[in-house]
Length: 448
Image (cartoon, rainbow, N blue to C red; front, top):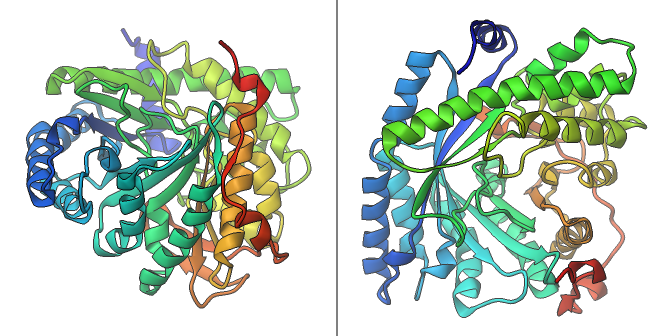
């Protein structure tokens, strides 16, 4: 049970420190919807989602009102569509977007392919359709896993994803490449991630499950204001205690949603996910530790401390912690990251170093529209190598801003925010990317 003192602390976190439940995400298994005929498969997908998720949004709103806890998003993740699409996947994509609108969620993830070791014909069809699908739909998110610690890096898929990102940017140029904001390339993708754009319902998941993502960067920053100048072991302990409180609320909401929907509780993802709102920034947690801007020398060490302390504190508050869990560093979605990039304190190379210790990777970064596809593939390959070697999830979500150059600004609005276009290393790498094939798994992957 949550005690009176915890209730009062939670009320303060909500009212003064931008605390919220970032998402309730319903995972739905669609393997039984597969059909040889595309339109028939699309109809089955639509019907199953609409039936299974019919009460999701209403239940989330009820919990929000009764407990006074903001639940910002209600979302759905589904089985990677390349696993059920026996023909053209585009009709299924349209059915997914239509179902998301029907049940009232803000995003639906799972237009995905798992290609870390190789590609099926269905994977290739899905990849080829991504630019069209993301330009035609509003609520659908796409992800592709191109590497894992056990399999290595599929460089054919990496090369292809650079081209797909460029095509998607071109086809959504009127919205500053918004389609690319709904497309993420993974290494070591997890099956129960509730956060978009990378959420999907993995093959090891049950028929359906409730996964909750909590967020509280503002709460952590306020907590650190009380320990100014104190040693880092005090900082770490303060973050741990704060993460415990945040995750307790997430566990409560997850259990309540599970009970009311009569759907099994999956996990709580205790990631610190920022928004463009001031007072809700991961970067400002780092500056509270003593850095002038995120990106200053010491940033990677500060982020490592933050990520570790969040996990240590949160894991004691829930019996099922999963997803990504840690700290996100999306540039356009974090006001502190935006300020750091605009000031020149944060470069793409520094962000890459930070991804070695954060939850995900290079996230929501606008780059010049003229950036070659091979350069984007190189960025993906570097990030995948970090994930593969360190046995962690990494990802790339970059947005080539068509017609814009370094120093310009792109505007997405809402939680996706805005960002300065960041410069990219201009030295060529075509011969490297065009080799294709597979970079072998590291020796330490052989753990049997």
